[in-house]
Amino acid sequence: MYSSSHEITASVALRRFVRQTQHSLERKVNALSHDVAPATVHACRTQARRLRAFLRTFRQAFNAAELTCYENALRRLTHDLGAARNADVAQQMIERLAEDRCVPREDGLEDLRKIAAQARTRAVWDLKARMIDKAWIRRLERLRRAASNPALIVESLEPMAVMTARVLRRRRRRLRRQLRAHRRSPKALHKLRLKVKTLRYALECVAPQDGVVRAEIKELRLLQHYLGEFHDEWTLRRRLARQRRYSRATINIRSRLLGHREVLLHNIEKHRDHLLRIWQQAPPERIRFLRTAAAA
Image 1 (tube, rainbow, N blue to C red):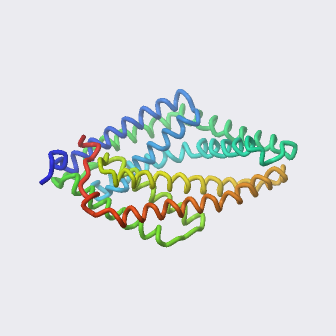
Image 2 (cartoon, rainbow, N blue to C red):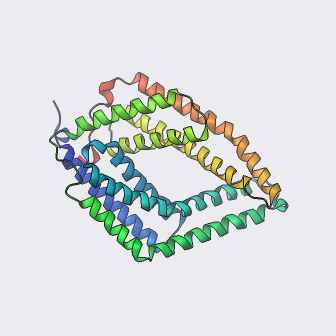
Image 3 (cartoon, rainbow, N blue to C red):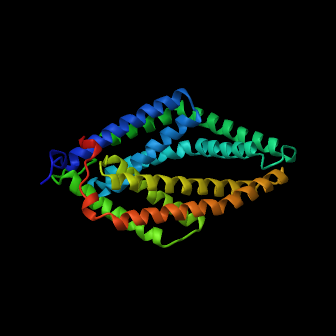
């Protein structure tokens, strides 16, 4: 027998969640308009990605045309924030390596740091100019309209918990298959990261009380962290490989990043194994019916 939290219908729960998450995203966009700091850029982009992941997870519960409109608006927002976020990540990584003193300062490191700082300044300037443009305001308004469109969500009497259980089983099955493939190319690991992130966000949305699910979320978070670090370092190595000037600094940094690659791959494999072990040991009924955050 289900509790009252299980009886809320999928359409009601999804509508509440979309409304709450959209309002949270709008607050973060407003904070970004006052201060384009690395933290505000990251918070805004993460919230948009979290909402996109949720929409993707429960795609069957939305009307296709309205969902496409909403997803396109969210995708455009994350794209607009991408340059500033990438510049922040590159600058932070170079600063971290500079603090570790893995690269002699007299071998062009200071010039390389200046290039990263200039790239960040240019990306922030471009983002600020975009945010005061009328097109940006129109896009945000389209985003609000898409989120509040009554036709966005298909009316359904199915309990949200039942739909959640079915969706999570499918997401776990797909991720398990990809984890067992043991592909280690950067592109394959990037695709794996996207699946890990989608499942993690979906689980966090359903507010689990079960210890097994909390352990699952912890492993997903750690796996996502190391996969993200791997992708960021791989991207920086490729970017530095295209730079002709300050070759000694770029060679030293690329060498350091390449050496760190095996450490990251080891951590990825470790948390991959932990996650597979959780799924193997946890009985299905332990992770079947979950109370949704929207229903709480």
